[in-house]
Amino acid sequence: MTVPVLTIDGPSGSGKGTAARRVAGELGYHLLDSGALYRLTALAAARRGIELSDQAAVAGVAADLDVRFAGDDDGEGRVFLGGDDVTLAIRSEEAGAGASTVAAQPAVREALLGLQRSFREAPGLVADGRDMGTVVFPDAGLKVFLTASAEERANRRYKQLKDKGIDVSLAALSRAIEDRDRRDSERETAPLRPADDARILDSSAMSIETVVETVLGWAREA
Image (cartoon, rainbow, N blue to C red):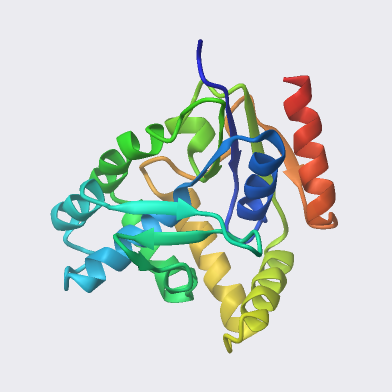
């Protein structure tokens, strides 16, 4: 029997990570935060002194990535690189920019493909990212493309970082999100786009609770 997969793709700040985590919890499924893998690759490369422009070396880092996802008391989840908790380190804007750079490299994407697919285990998987429904799991039973306006996504990210005590400029965040949208959608390899059979959900005026309930409803239909 094929293990069911639900994919949630979308641009940075659309809420797909939070939605995926909550949907996985409700369904009792495993979770794949594919964006974290690219952030981890960029972080691991930087820690080894490898330039992100050295595609072969960065792909080697990706192929050897020692990653583990774990839950915690606040429901946010923790990310470990080897034995090191890097949850906060990979959520910085610098890590996000690094992730966007390495994600555009075909060799890195190929190196991470097998790792991503290995998360598909019973009873099921919720995978969030940018090419989960188009490239990694094209046979997924439900594909969701979650989006929101750039302004709304910048505001959400600003609040998220301020709540964590991270000082950041809203204007700088807006520019970073627009730049990343452009890089992600214009890259030659696995550009950000909805799968042909994806269900589009604009969360600009929706609470995360409404987003989760909508996706769960679609999952039950599927």
